[in-house]
Length: 430
Figure 1 (tube, rainbow, N blue to C red):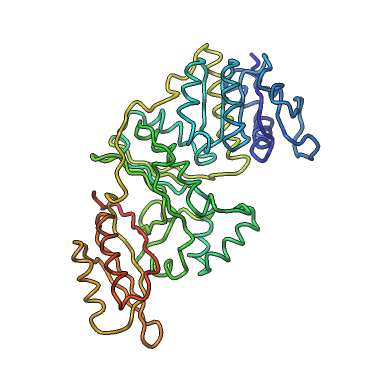
Figure 2 (cartoon, rainbow, N blue to C red; figure 1 turned 60 degrees about the vertical axis):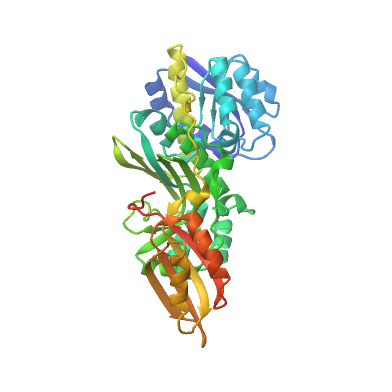
């Protein structure tokens, strides 16, 4: 049996799909019992040179791919919301199943697209939308389906992980490492989506929706980026036996879902603490399975191509059995979301103060008035009459922490509050 594929987009990922299909053609055919053939590829620029070739139509006309009656599966790797959304809806309406790697689109319009797939009786798969080649979507939808998932914690942006790893291991500043990441191609010319946490937030919205069977929108995710992290923060974290990562956190608790992306101080004993460079990892806890972790390359043409082709192979098997996936949409619950003020973590607070008697005692009193106590304190001189203080609190409500910080800002002996970073510890309880 021959199943024909149309691809929308021939950038880095599109080329990776072609390469993996060609180099592993025999194994893929043996495992699917069919011949997967690329029939047409949509590309905006037909003149640019490419490292791939094949017996397929290369076109700049969307209809030549979307409306070809011989094409069974459409693969969208264009990126962005439009025209990708319109093209996918068009493909489904024309009786084609769809594979996409588009995290932006799934995070914002996933519900609409899944409903359209169900209405058309076709498949919509998106394994490559989170974690590149890491098989996390199928794991949440299928392999871990018997569990009540309680935690999903992830390092799901390679750019920020590269930056923080280099800062920690080499003692360098944020701006210098960011410039290096841009030169190496790990960061875009405009890196804001990565370093401001938005890329990770889109992925977390997808993961949380699948893990907790309740729709989580992008706007539901609290987001904070890494631009305030300094070499000093990483040095202090190391003194505390910890490191700092941009962490995506989703928790299903009795009072609701908690979803947040921000820099987090992790104990070195935590499984995610050793994930370095551009690698990604997703730590999942289920009530039956316990702790699991998925690790690998979160981007790149071949890892992402691997995930996309795994989805193509699933659809090919469905076509042969004259069926579609029965788990296109798993959001059958409507769980409440926790307010940011109710988030519950320990905090690292770095301040510059006047080096005078009773300053530390006054700070302790201001925090105690908000019912917050300290787990540890680090103080170091900074000039003749100044001191840098790092306060590590016991776990507390975020609302209480903000109340204490308002009082600290008004204290005349405090010159500046230079950073506030959340901890993520295994023993934190809400």
